[in-house]
Length: 256
Image (cartoon, rainbow, N blue to C red; front, side, top):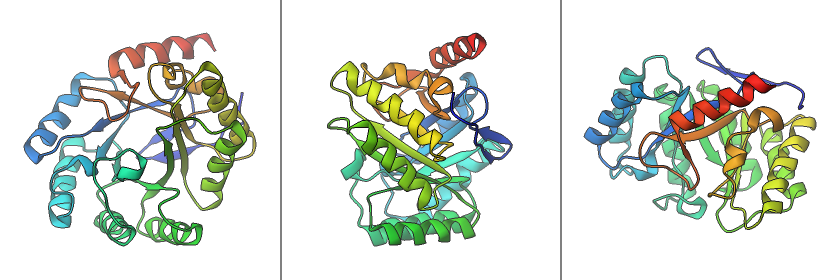
């Protein structure tokens, strides 16, 4: 079992107990986004991710901030993760780094999102570290992520990415990979254990698609602090419906 390490956001402790459930919102327009946010009360979850790259008006920063304000009013004290996933990492829209940086800084300065997802390979390491510092000064926590939709790197490379993200200042390093065989899923789980033992935790890892589904359930054993479930449309392949995910996590937790 990995040594415990924690990150707290609005009273939620990531890295303690069973993995927390995050539900992504991927609507293209504001009315649907807010309707789906209100409907979340029918599902078990701990925090919400807004995938702003799915939002049709994502290049209109005032519109993005207005949507965030409306989400904040609906969610009240539920933690909110803001994510603009670029096309290079499986997102819906392209965005150059300077625009990407400006958008994330605007969100942090508005104080409406508790966590902001940055992509580990979106810029040179020194620029990422500087941006993390700016976001921290505005009071936002940082998920620093790496996604591979084409395959699974070897376990040492996955662990390297997680420890690098921690070294650059991330509060929650994250790696998501696509498995082609069972050994790929084992590589992801092995790297999760290794990175935790090297002090990179709390962290978030997952092997995507049907083959990797087990990795979304066993985080309490291997050391992934958060898992993504869906309450409608999924944001990545292999996400379980939140109700089923909650039941499985509870069963595993009771067995430990």
